Image (cartoon, rainbow, N blue to C red; front, side):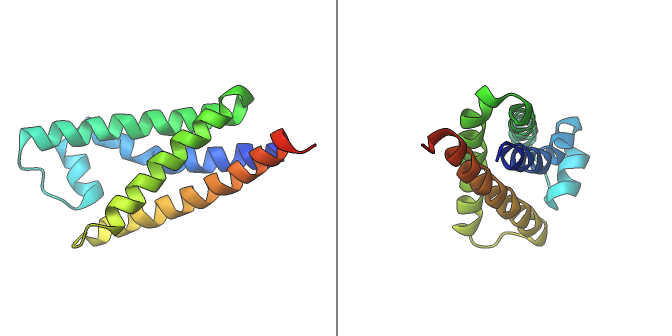
Length: 126
């Protein structure tokens, strides 16, 4: 069971890390999301998003090796993937690039749910 929890956290963490390249600038963000970042405020917000996703990914991966972080990391990952999926699903007109991000977050969410199930079995079985 511990292996399942760790693998699920690593996979979800690796899914959260690629957007981190957006911190390097406008060109990387526009390429990653197929959007035009024509305004400085939007650039700052998207770069900050990149940093936050990098932090989430790092915490998920670290928690794979530090059991005391796993409950919090699972909650963080589920909140991150879940809210992105809900926001994307509830917003009409998203582009094909965002659909790929949506699919990756579905994989992350499934992994985290499996990890949560294994985590609960480890900690609450009698």
